[in-house]
Length: 243
Image 1 (cartoon, helix red, strand yellow):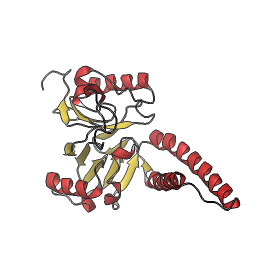
Image 2 (image 1 turned 90 degrees about the horizontal axis):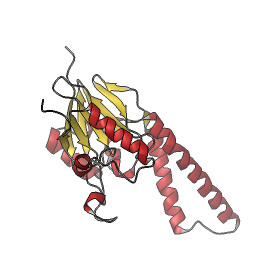
Image 3 (image 1 turned 30 degrees about the horizontal axis):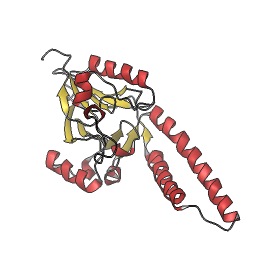
Image 4 (image 1 turned 30 degrees about the vertical axis):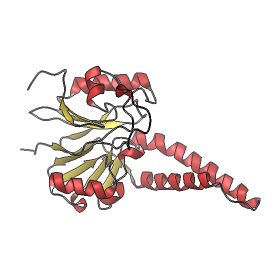
């Protein structure tokens, strides 16, 4: 009999500003909910949003695992708040949905090309890039290196762990669906950030495509019994009957 996949929240995330509480930008440091998905010998860490030292400590506290025992890291999107602790898992295979990888990669490459041209023009004039340009160049170079390391995720990461596209907040945002006899689990990423969004039926308004985000929100609550929210805990889907 195939093993049943399991999901365990390692670190509960937070929004930098919670719009449904009337908060303004910069209320706190935003970070994603990090989830450990286990299927047989496969251990997938989803959205390592905390800085590496904090996340490594949470991983040991919650699961008894060290970073070397994580086989895969999956990013539901490429948002910086979802990948702060990524480098702690050098031994793992890094994965992201192909559409997210492509839609993020093009603007990064274009921005790098523009900055490279600006640097060349500055050198020709006997000058250097401005400090903010130099900072942006370093950020883009790091993002490009991370994205290059991230492999396009297959449709199934392990037995009973399947990709579940939830586009809207970003064009390629993709969750993970764990069909189980005792209730299907969906890791939503930022498609459903918090319990307030879920209870009020509100998709994120900062989405790249708000209409598409609403459709993904509706699809998420249609499919799953348990939801791991992007900046909150694992919760029972309030639209489902008890199981």
